Amino acid sequence: MHTGEKPPVPRTLDGASLVAHERIHAAEKPFKCDECGKAFRWVSRLSQHQLIHTGEKPYKCNKCAKAFGCSSRLIRHQRTHTGEKPFKCDECGKGFVQGSHLIQHQRIHTGEKPYECSDCGKAFSQSSSLIYHQRIHKGEKPYECLECGKAFSMSTQLTIHQRVHTGERPYKCGECGKAFSQNSTLFQHQIIHAGVKPYGCSECGKAFSRSSYLIEHQRIHTRAQWYHEYGSTLEGSTHVSRKKVNTVKKLHKCNECEKIFRWRSHLIIHQRIHTGEKPYKCNECGKAFNRSSRLTQHQKIHMG
Image (cartoon, helix red, strand yellow):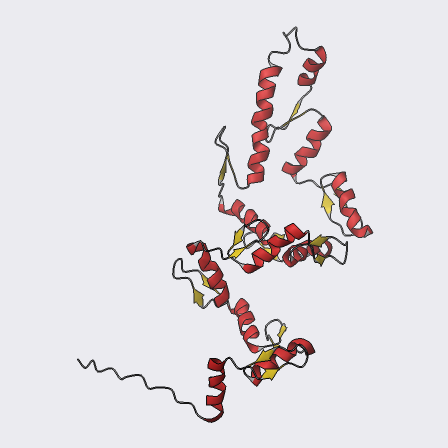
């Protein structure tokens, strides 16, 4: 039956276009780099590759002046300014700047982990994750801080660490303007504004925005139980030393969170968590701390 649709017209190539096209089928790569020997099918690709060796970056971003060796990388970069994410996931609708990022993301839905560690058998969805993991076995830390010599297995870890020295805080909260050195810390902070408290205490039901706050809180129940069991009975006990009775009597409790301390000095230090007080200031960079020990530790950065 005739549908009215026109049959596809075969693409015809001639001359240089045909020769170039035939190289795809023949796997022919006649254009070779004199520097490293890498071969290419097209002279344009060779020219683009040679920029790696010369260090030339002719493609500049008009938004931030960042430069690139090839136009395709500039196009990808410009999407960070425009917010364009043309590669969409069919499963969840999430968009990505690069097609390769979409492929990696789709493995979350499929559960595919094609990259396996030959040392321990652990599998990963991304080749980069496997490379980082293998450094654990090798003890390899190729990314070293020029300021203090501390080394890291991942370049991202080094970048985050260097902000200790530079004081850079690129992640800013849209609600209150507070800035952070890590995206993850900003995310944790934003939970405060959202009022989300996903970490609930199984003892009393009190909820917290961070798991670390929950862990800290749960110590109240541990100490309170100890105080209840011993503090109420030690006075009349003939089996417990007078020293232990006096110890219980002298416990110091925080009025904010009911955490208990043996020494008043420890309570004072702890209360700075609630007040935000940071009395110990670095003379070099002005950074402040709630404990003198943390200031001492920090000052080692400036000593090199």
